[in-house]
Image 1: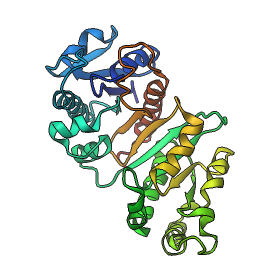
Image 2: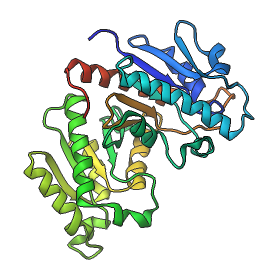
Image 3: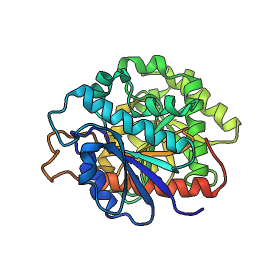
Length: 318
């Protein structure tokens, strides 16, 4: 393929998203980057990059009301997604948004992942946290089977069908976007010590083990369920290419401990590559010059690498 074209949405204009996006872009010359954001941020963009104005809002105003900030963020997401779906862009890198602002703008309780799923028409999506380098050295990739839900709801949401669907998404992405032949996937247990034969719960026997067996019968290399206190260490040692975590915090706690500043959020299942940094809007840091752009830089570079792998292979969609 030719030049990889990535759209970079600037997120909530009051947060650190625009600042880290602009700084990270200046260190990237192997991809073509196009910014999407409000009129008020155009002058702050680094020279030499295309800037698409998606709303008239003055992004320089930190006191911008929630509804206006959310509207500006949504407009950029919609336009970048439209171009990615029609093939103008190979991927989209999204700066952080503020969910209450999105809700004030009419997005309800949805975040980036749900909005992108709806806009693209993707039947299924998955949330993968990926770091190709960690403080332990090797990569760590963690798929969150359930995302932003109360802990008490997890046992009811965690079904055989959900684990099968999410693991298939992960296996397909690792084969196509990461170019891994026969990826090795571990399924993290829900209960302590993988329930120790039922002493601490029944989900391993009734949900996780049947899902693993069904996936193995399909030819996927899936191991588990494995206790949370060992599975991530084993993945970091190179035993597995990725881990499926049953709920948000068990996956994110392990992931951020060894990847902070290098982690990238990857949405699986979209017809284009989408990544984002692993941090939020950090309103308290906006405008101080102290925001760290390393995670945004990692998100841009990973998006470019995955897009090249995906579109060089001639396949489209997961």
